Image (cartoon, rainbow, N blue to C red; front, side, top):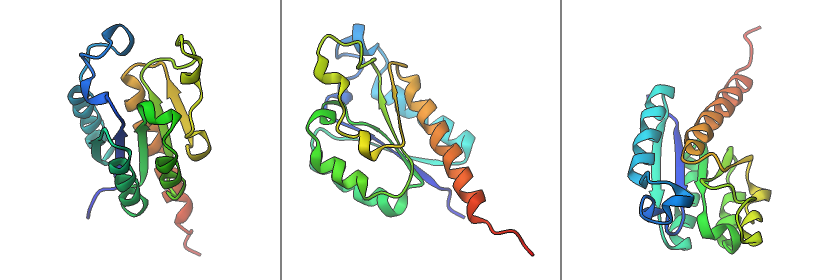
Length: 158
């Protein structure tokens, strides 16, 4: 029997984690995060489908697949948080838990525009400022919500 999948989506510039502004984002790479997410997925009996794209249309295509293939979604939309309306619309079509992750605390950043994400209407929750641990916490939360959904869907035997 196939395990349920959690899709982890990453937006523009996250492929350069570890090199990009380490004082803000740390020194861990996206490959480090992916490895940790897959290890946790195995512990929780979930497959982790991990994606990073610079282009919004690529992430939209992944969100469309997630609509029918994912138990939940973890997304770090990065800069698309502020202008990714097409991705927002794609996520709104998903009937699964969605947790938005930001490595830095976007509410403490110098640029006020970083604190306002377009994705708020489409996500179940948001984790911000917890570093790369935010990904793992988001996966745990999605797994918990998936378990609750599954147990609610099971009707008791009369």
